Length: 289
Image (cartoon, rainbow, N blue to C red; front, side):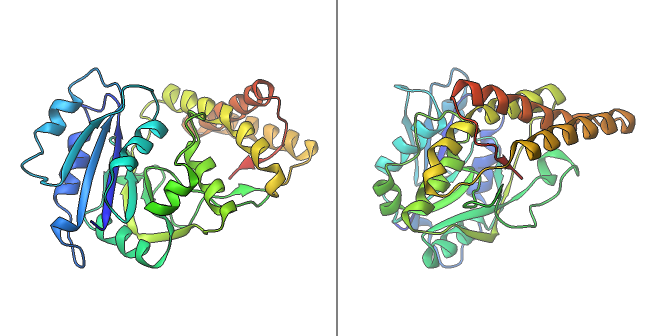
């Protein structure tokens, strides 16, 4: 087995069929159907997610469904899936996104030449034309440290994943950022697989985006605290104040333009970040781009 695609699933009845349809319709070149498998890891779903996935057994012959009900969290689900994976390479995607029809082949080919890869995200297809496709490569934090990527389109050599101990199950959110840092500190660099496209689903409401940003940001100071010794440098307090004033300015501009969503997402991040600094007793003064 060359590739294992692992999908954590929690109450994804409204979206997981779209993802499985996309995986069923993959265009393969070097890979044969028997060369790859799909592992859906149910993480305490209470809706019809498992029943929907079961309907794909005849359509996706290398499909497996396992339970990870002993502990909540996408990290735990991904780790449990990786334990039974038979592929030389692991590829992670999410139950609420949709991979492009060439994603499996593209991420496999990228992994043949690189130990650790990230997909290209496209935000248009599932959200309308509000952000567009990712065009500038991997995500960065500033001041510069290692780059990072989302766990919903990440690939890695299985032996490296096992050696790293998988995703941290102690970090509920931004676990993919921490995973990227930890892998790269150990040696392998993160390669941007531009041809491996994932259509990412955003929160549809302004309040949903605000809450998501806040929750993510609470864990960011904890990650920064962990990697200061690895060379993660700090912003000055002056630059932090300037950044927060800039957020207020963009929020006011959004009011006049009738588009509060970007400004409120940024505000949610800023406020969640401050809460996280207090909660984790960390004040590293760095911010992601």
